[in-house]
Image 1 (cartoon, rainbow, N blue to C red):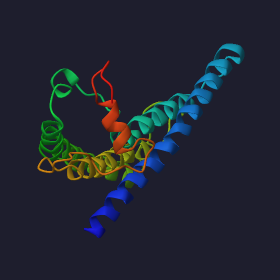
Image 2 (tube, rainbow, N blue to C red):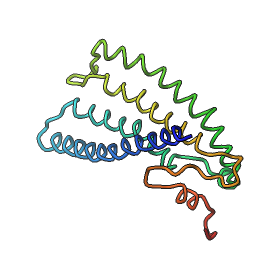
Image 3 (cartoon, helix red, strand yellow):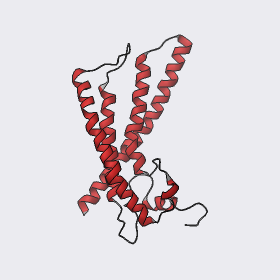
Image 4 (cartoon, helix red, strand yellow):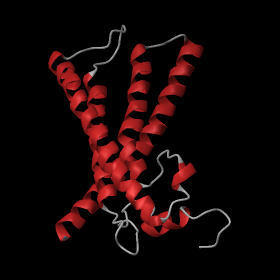
Length: 192
C-alpha cells in the first residue's frame, strides 16, 4: 500500500510541477502576442514564426495543463445531477467515469497521436507557411499532455472508495486538499 501511496503522490507532484510551469507559458504568450502586434502595426514587420509560436504555446497551455486542472478538480463538469448526489454516489461516478470514459479516451488519443509525432520528427516536417516552424514539438504535446491527464485520471479514480464510510479522496499535493475540495462541494447557503 505504501508503494501506491507514493505513486499517487508522485503523480500529483508531477502534474503540480507541470501546471505551475504552464503558468509562465501564459505570460510568455501574452508578451509574444503583444510584441508581434506592436511590430506589425508600428514597424510593418511580421513573421509567421511568431504567429506559430503563439499557437504552439497555447497548445502547450491547454494540453499540459489538463492534468493539473484535474488534480485541482477545476475541470468543466456538468453539476446538474452530480451536485445533488451523496458523497458515496459521487465516488461511484468518479470511479466509473474515470475508468470507463476518461482513461480509455486519453489512452486512445495518446496511441493515435504518437505516430503523427514520430512521422513529423523523422521527416523533420516543417510548417507549410513561409518562415514557419518545425512541427514535431507541437505534435509531441498531444501524447505527453494526454499521458499526464491519464496519469491524473488514474490517480483520481483510484483514490476514492465508495464502500468506505468516509468517502474522501486522498489529499493532493497541489494547492487544494481533500478538505478544501469537500467544503467546496457543499451546497450554497449551507454551513460546513
